Length: 169
Image (cartoon, rainbow, N blue to C red; front, side):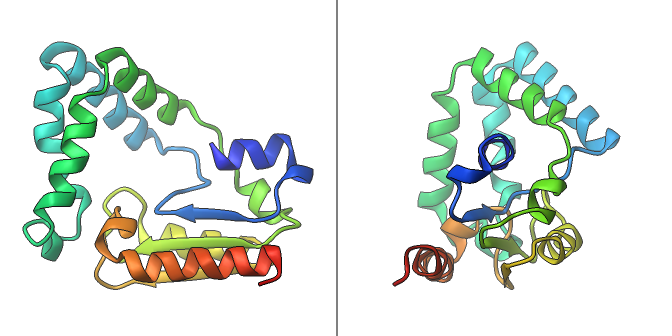
């Protein structure tokens, strides 16, 4: 969503944070996986999907270490209407490549990536960081796809540094 906003209204964006996110369009393999997940949700429901979806998003060392965070995400997911979840999966599968937004950014960009992220490979995050003229990258050794929960202080410090760069603090 942030990249779409920056693409459409670049003059309104003063800074951009991509936290465990990607400017790349999904690969064909990833599109198929999202479609498969959307079909699974339609057949088996949101609760069954969430029971297996959230845990692998954490780095292996954090899967049992952060039960409250995992339960929170599962509860939020399970409260999501089936049509909303299926639509979100299809929407992510259809999103275009937005790397041009990074290449032409006239604002600072922050990329936060987890070494154990199963959704956004570390190599993709490294490549994206090299695209933006002004970029800061934070690579977190002990995180998966949920850096804001797995290493919240490091993530918070990076976001505050971006805000300071944008707003002059």
